Image 1: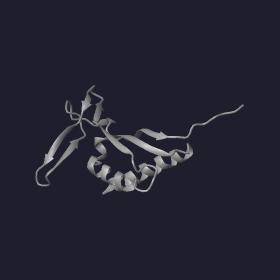
Image 2 (image 1 turned 90 degrees about the vertical axis):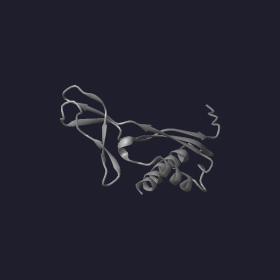
Image 3 (image 1 turned 60 degrees about the vertical axis):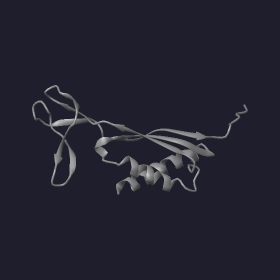
Image 4 (image 1 turned 180 degrees about the vertical axis):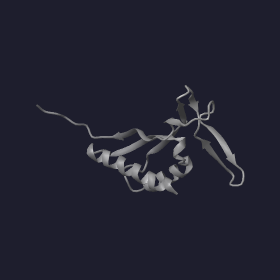
Length: 129
């Protein structure tokens, strides 16, 4: 269950950023997760709900936006990844080769695991000068 350890790092990072701004509360977190990370959305949300307990994130909502995988080939193809099925294992897997020429491809999108936005309540700061 690598979702839990991934979410631990995300929560740790957000709490450290919130501390820098003396935040009173974190109210919303928006993540972008690439489909090639194979991180499960429900497992991430479950881990988030456990890890936020007893912190300034306790009442925070989480939004997870999936980023579709995109590949690029030297033949000029740029687009979606095709998927295959391994029936004996009951899994669907990405085919990381060009659907046009069968050549090697570069992954352009789909490996992201980004904290896109964090909404937090910070104290008013008055600067006297």
